[in-house]
Image (tube, rainbow, N blue to C red; front, side, top):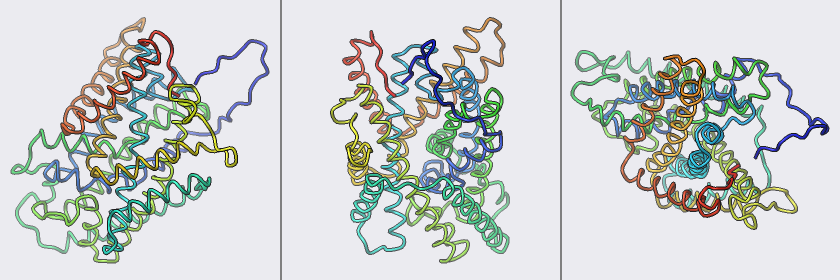
Length: 446
C-alpha cells in the first residue's frame, strides 16, 4: 500500500543505504539457495527425458531477460519492487491486479510444496512412517512455529548457506571420483547430458524447462532492497542479473554431475527425491543421508519462511480490504501475529499435500511466477520503448525476448496445471471485478 507524503509533515525514518553490489548478490544467492535444482531434479528429468542441464540453461536465458526487466523497473519504482506495481502503473491497474493475484497463488503454494518435499525426505530416514503422518507433522510444525513467533535469524541462514555450499563441494568431488572410476558406454558420454540424439524432443525439453524455472524463483526479491542499496540505479540491475547467472551456472553444474552419475535409462526409486538417490549411487549411504538431511533442513526453513510470508501477504490484503478484513485483516491480541492467516495457510498446505503431487504443485507455482514475469517484461517494454522519447531497438528486444520465452515456457506447462491456474485467475478476476465495481475503483492488493 502506498501512503502519500504530505508537505510539511515530519520526515519519517528512512532505511540506511548500506548494501553494495556483492552484498546484494550474496543476499539473492542465499534467498534462492545453492541447492535450488536438487528438489526438482527428478521431475525435470522425467519430463525432459534426462535433459536437465539443457532445461536449466534455457530457463536461465529466460530469467536473464526477465532479470534485466526487473532491474530496469526497479529504477523507475525504487521503493515498490513488485511485479503488480510495475504492471499496474505502466499498463493498467486491472492487469496489475491479475499479476498480483498470480503472486498470491505463488505465496500460498510455496509452503504446500515444502510440506510435500519435507514429507518425502523424512520418509527416506524413516520409511516405515506413513506419508500422511509426515504431512500432518510438517504442516503442523510450520504452523506452530509461526504461531508462536519463532524466527530463524538471518545470520543462521547465512551460515547454513555456507554449509550447503560445503555439502555441494563434497558432492562434486565424490561425483567426479565416481564418474572417472566407472566405465562409460559409448562415445559422447560427457556431451549426452546436454543433447542425447535418441531421447531429445524439444516439446518435452520445454516442458521440463517450465518446471526448471523454480530453480530461479526468488531472484526478484533483490528489487525489494532498492531503498537499502548504496547505488540502486546501477547495483539492483547488476545484482539481479548476476544472481540469475551464478544460480544458473551452479545449478547447471550440479545437475550435469548428477546426470553423469545416474544412467538415463535407469528409473528413480522416487522421482521427488531423485537427487538424494543420485548422491547414494555416487558416494554410498553416507552421502545419500548427508544430501537428504541438508535438503530436509533447508526445506523446513523455506517452508516456515514461506508460510510466514503467505500469512503476512494475506494480512496486508485483509487490512487494505482486498480480502474480508474481519478474518484476514486481524492480529492475535497477545502475540501480535496474523493467527487466522497462519492457520489458513497451514490448512491449505496440509490439504494440498494430501491431494496433489509435488510435480503438480511446482507446475502451479510456476504458472503464477511466469504470469508475473511476463507482466514485468511487458511493463518494461511499454516504459522503455513504447513510451520512450527516443526508441532504441535493444530496449524492445530484451523485454520482448523475455516475454516470448516466458510465454513459451508457460504454454509448455501441463494442461491440468494450466486449467487449475486459469481457474484460480478466473476466481481472482471475478472477485476483484465485484469488489472494484468492474475495476472502476482502486483495489489494493498489498
